[in-house]
Image 1 (cartoon, rainbow, N blue to C red):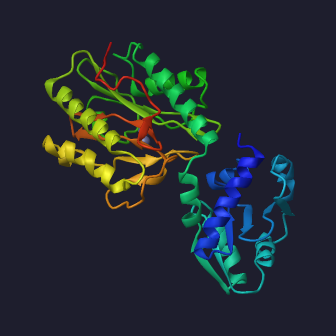
Image 2: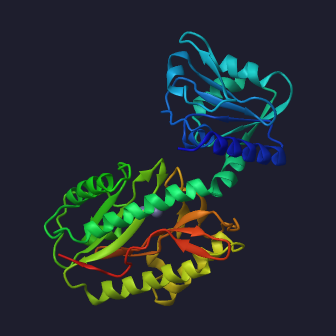
Image 3: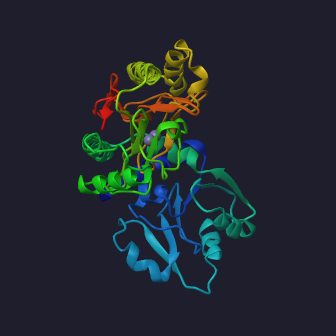
Length: 366
Ligand code: ZN
Ligand code: ZN
């Protein structure tokens, strides 16, 4: 979906970061990083495919020759360098790198086997973490990216509106996930294989593997899902109650919503990610539940559902307008129930905007 102009801007921005950090060339294999820079959504495979992006000079895409038709829509200015089965693509990459001293960044999503194949041929290369130049650029979303993220989250909200109307009592977690995936597709997002439903005691496991448990009266219900629009992800969580909730569930939910609201109110340009995490943690600790909030507050979201910046203790990244991440405090009581309330949030010029508007209260489902 990214226009050639937008892709060119991204390459320029990444090259700017490379110049600042003394990185002469950046190597990127099939991944969301490659999609971000070229628009190409290629599947990782053992056959070497690498974008070789010099700080100065034309980018090349080393790729199996028979896959050339797949990259025909590549933006102008990126020149393919095809290789045939039986040839050594690592030698082609080494030739591009040349024999002079240089610093080469490798994106973290690129398969290590590519580096292992190339490294012995270029002992003069100093290897760097390519994410240091990719992450800061990817973290600042363009207007087109924000539009896609907004559409993805709005769709997730519409799915939630349908989910609360479902007869959930008696349904298994797996059945609910199947229904949610169908609804995601019906409402216009690409339905991905991610997404979970957790009932009763299972909701106390933040990354529960949805299974055969059927929802019973008194269960807390956590649904956490998203889908994607033009590759850009949604990620929303709500907690419901099957029938009247217990006093403990109500109270935990109140605390989680207060933490969500306090964190949201703290988000604006100039604030460190670690401090937003701390604000939410303080609210939950104030209710005596500090040890029940067992994960970070949130994660950046874009082409990946989890990407920088992370809202986590010690993360000193300073928030900037255009960053998009989740705010998802939770409280988990093993053997009993869990509560999580998650929204995608955009940092604006003077504060923040939630991209999810769906009711955050503890809705009762049938
Ligand atoms: Zn989620
Ligand atoms: Zn999340």
